[in-house]
Length: 608
Image (cartoon, rainbow, N blue to C red; front, side, top):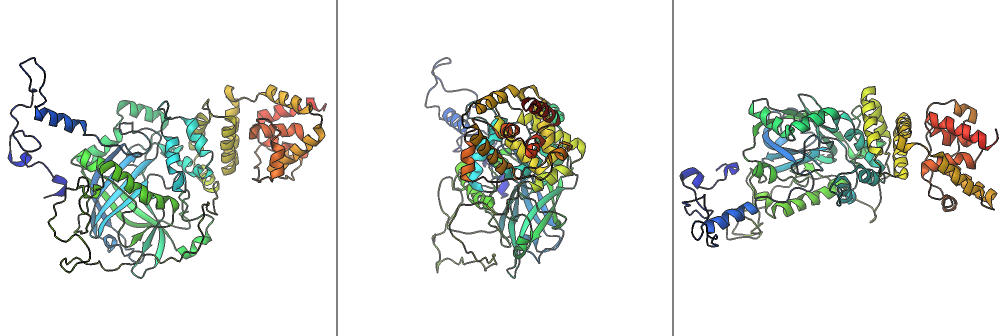
């Protein structure tokens, strides 16, 4: 029997309605009552069974990727990569492997619109001759965080406010202000590709770094990429509003209708590889999930094509019960020490056991199509028919034996237990490069989306300043444009009167000279020395980047005397504390119109 076609036997050979236990039902329209208008009797077992089944139809939705759509098809090898991997399903061009794919949004609930600005899940299950392989990724090649320790907090920040159940920008920007590694992901999410037009016109990526192993045991780090043969299409913001208002399930419908019409979606699978012996040659860590691998030095290598040519038969059994886990691999493909991947290996299988039960891999959509054998018996909802007498290993009565040994990466580890970040963080280079790769119109849309996010009324000046600093470090012109646009908004204008009050309070201190010098030196330490003269600096129309300096304890103590000033306020206050040619450092961080306003004010205060 086709494992996708499990049905009650009555669906094949009985025209009559029945209970779950097979008893015939002669009336499926009316409850059993005392008289025509009397109370319902508890002995109406059919009614109780019917309601009880209905009450339990829904299972817990996925904590992320709840909204999704699935389709079936095949993967065909087109290029020989046996020098890189001994995976059986990649053994030769022309080999085909059945697959099932689930596309999804990430953050919102099962019934949410498919037009929200959100990453998209792209998960593929390969039913190979050596077991299943789950390639579980997204449509973006990077992720927000590089360590799975932060994953629960990240999801909480992206999910709706637990009090109001509304997704709010201030919560998202607050959390990620502590994680500058997220900048690269935001260059995708706030870009035009942040809202795919549908699932057929969407890239896919394995995101994490895996390892390919050949028969000789040689290992290579690998990244997997899916590229749609029909190209990538996205919805602009106003288009998303229109499409979402017309049909909140537009992407699911588009996928189903296209396959039904014979317009089969197709993707090409590419890989990028790095020899682990060469990983120190790059300015990024190959195991850092917040980085892409530059295609000019690590080119895409084609592997095969995937065609989705069959719609699923039942949404619940082949979408809701469909379960993926990055830990499910086959010989020739292995994990890496990517911190996010390591935590996903546990978390994904754990959430499936919670959502579907401990025997979720016995469900038809998740079970392997090849012969398989183990002694994993019983448990909740174990419906596999078994009649063995031996449920242990090894045994002289059971012919089952170990499979032939296959190569896995041979890695020598040397270190101590520690919790730390990677050495090559380099959080700003790739985000800046990606922003500069956009055409001017696309950059403008990117800036507008960030202005909208940073204008959240609950966002503090401190958080807003941190984000301006991050984007300035990624691209100076981007930081300047964001600061200029924000300062022109009525709610964001500089309040000189507040700074004037602070200046008066500062002047009132009896030990002003000492405090003024210590505070000024503290700010100078943070900003770093700049050798450009004040006159030349004032001619500049571009912002000057601020070097990141970690001030010593005594400098931090000096900064404590500045009451409740954010970084931006501190920069502006710099002009009142230190009247020297270094003044331009603070001024260059301001938009041009505010820079001129400050010059006039400083001239007045200093009698110039």
